[in-house]
Length: 264
Figure 1 (cartoon, rainbow, N blue to C red):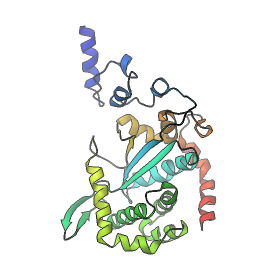
Figure 2: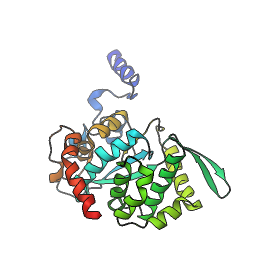
Figure 3: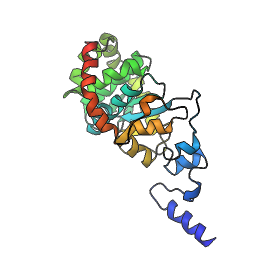
Figure 4: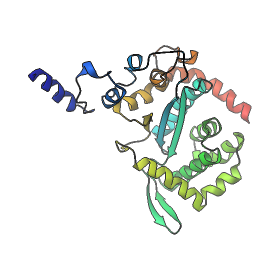
């Protein structure tokens, strides 16, 4: 009995504050999530049956000019989406807001963003872009990838959106209107509702859950994290070695260039 309590105290004192003994970490999805080992427990929790399953929902809370956000979107999120986009394994939800703050102003809001007024402009454009595409990642993500990989993302927004076959006039008008501020306000509310609270960006959730393990796994190898979390039969796109999506992303760059060239 004393040994048991020592074990519980040790893990609750860790960064994850997991108060369950390791032998029980994979017993349920809730325990695995609390202890930050959900992907590692996937084989036990989610046997690979030949059935359809819900997609893994990847939540991305980011800022348009944050260097870490840019690296994640361009080098990890977009290449993973390119590989999985026809499989139904992954769904993406993006929230351009991050560490911004807001104050009510008339019928809308004023925002202060971590990287200045230009980032607020970028966040507004991307919130309006999401809304214009009805939050369809197949329509908005190529445009966001184009924007974020540009040396000057906000300046590149118009051409990136046009090249992606979207209506720049509508999106630009939205970003300059009360509608745009309300959309960014909505992203801010979603960000404020995170538990645990956002402390850096990008902040990554899997099926609404954030842990240190999920964050580090998403940043280093999102493809493996998504594939191991998926409850259904793994598609061929998930059959890869665990050398990290970074290597895959480097191989994918040429294909990405062709993809955008075909859009323009």
